[in-house]
Image (cartoon, rainbow, N blue to C red; front, side, top):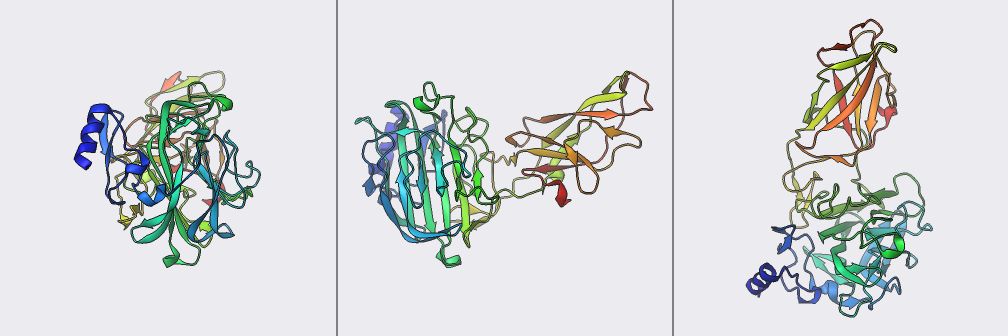
Length: 409
């Protein structure tokens, strides 16, 4: 059966309909993606097709019992609302189709969003969203499959395949669970009613979660959310190419322990040792202001060090945000100037750390390994320099990836 499926896929570029999945849940399958063959992230678990939403646009959203207890930022329950637009919610249905910010902007409704966008399964010729309870690696699990779904209004020319899974982790404490997002293909990002044209542009989809309060630490959006083209296959933050705490491209884990998500991006993540820093080759001086300008170049040369924390669940202790064997640093990127030359000041600093060091923060989604490089413009004031240009060796800096708090140094 598998051989026949592969032959059909190679010949026709087809994917297996949701209800024909029959392979073991932990065995990777192959599908055509961007003209190459690679393991698919979506888990083929037949139990996740036991129930289905009707062919619909935004409603209705049924209540589903997940089969185990959840503690999500103090919301304690064993049921969720399954919404057609790429998410599940707690306490109330959520028919909203244009992605809002995942904080408190969604009306305060706790939400877990694998792909918050305007999914439209109205066409009778297309698929529907399915869900159900099953097991994953011997643990109770609840899954929602959004396989080969189109976008509003009634479009099937571009299709997305993704999956949302909750896994019981009461072995680590009452109410604990894992959130897993899986992506096989993301070809559209927006519906017609959200400003999109042919599934692109407008108010693009978002990925993440929130408890609805907007309190710091209770919400998270994946890099590339709301950014046109970023989450699409081949985009700067492509969902199918990247991963989080997983070895499989297209798989993202969020571990909920004690009601909190415990592994969101680390504050002040020092990546200096894995970054090659090239000082400006030459500074150009403005004689009227004594300001020198040049570019610092950063190259991510970090080694890939993934360690399996749970091999069956494919949870690693380090994330690989960059796909394949590439480890990307999450943005933004911050350079702290720990020792400028005597008498020299940084003119275009973003701010100053608690220890008095100037820093510049550059807003980028990520810094991939090896390429592309990141060039950061710097402006220095050196009153003692009269030459129109100059060459001199660099000076020590620290490089930080992700959120940066200048009061923590």
